[in-house]
Length: 185
Image 1 (cartoon, one colour):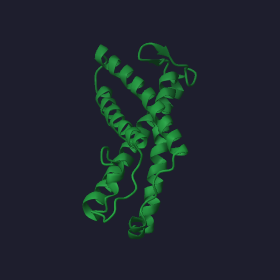
Image 2 (tube, helix red, strand yellow):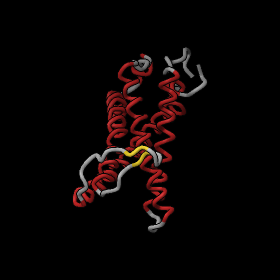
Image 3 (tube, one colour):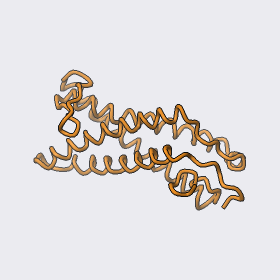
């Protein structure tokens, strides 16, 4: 472990990070499961839950992006930066930017797909959301693979993010992961 601890993220950033991480794992798992079900009341219920979770994730992602824009993250410690090859620094920043882009793009594509398919989103069964795009079956067919592909891309980037964090923890032993773990302050 490092001689001096790396600067940590604040409690709000840590909370938003882990809430979004858990929500993304859950919605991805439900998405995979529900698409394999035959048409049934269970499948319809899961699709509604998936939409509600997508709206919640979109809101959480916007909140996280706002927080990130108004609260500078702690800088990478100089000793870690010095040990990282240039390609790793580029990958570090590029992965984070792509993650934020996909946090927004995946639910927006899902919302657009649902609207184009003519299936409104009624958040929690109480709050009808406006259609994101007009109903258009051809547009729905075009959007469906984009929603799926962007969700898979988000899952792959999240897996890469986790792998990099674990590499820092177990291979480099530089304590970088501890900056984002709750209850370590």
